[in-house]
Amino acid sequence: MVRVLLIECRRLCQEALQTLIDGDGEMCTVAIAKDSNQALNAAMMLRPDVVLVDIDGNESDCFDTIALLRQALGDLPIVVVAGRCLDSGIRRALELGVLGYVLKDEGFGVVRRAMVAALSGQHLYSARVMDRIETGELSVERENRTRLDALTARERQLLPLLARGMSLKEACVVLSISYKTADKHKTNLMNKLDIHDRVELTRYAVREGLIEP
Image 1 (cartoon, helix red, strand yellow):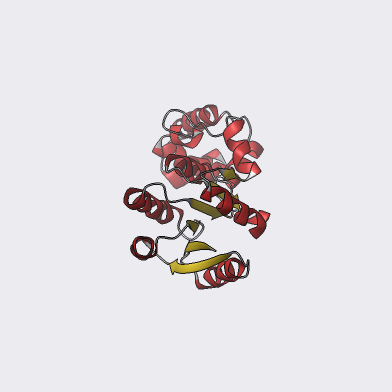
Image 2 (cartoon, one colour):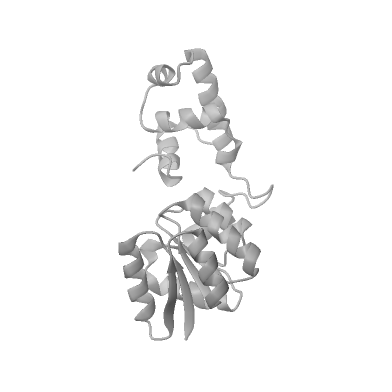
């Protein structure tokens, strides 16, 4: 029986994932943790075979929790599930040695396969996640920096405004900067992202979770 520690902060998602895990017949949920303290305590006391983390509740906190588990328990197999294919999440997963990264639209069968693979020290990332890595959309070099990391703070502020369809003049008012400055930031950010029109910029912003679809 594969013993799973589930890290999930939302009650409904806890119940759904626990039902799927416990109903598998070859897996069982040994504990559910809502935060890093609970996760670390459960992992230290129960020594689960694998950890399943839903990063949609709070991606930053979830990866901080994974980092703590890594420090305390070394090579404990960890699999994450996510609703969206974001460079930020993929990069952190790579940095922390997460063995499985599964998108929720693929279903529990893929999550299960990722957990089984992790038990053997093997990676199983969703196809779309691998595409982001293998096609160069996500750089795994230079400390796994993404194209988004290359933007300045002001360029990061301007990007979602333009992606939502706001004119450059309107964005100037929101950011309290001159048109000339805004135009320079726009040119720089599109060059850094290798994006050449507003439609492509909007698609990128949606994919990276900067704006809602």
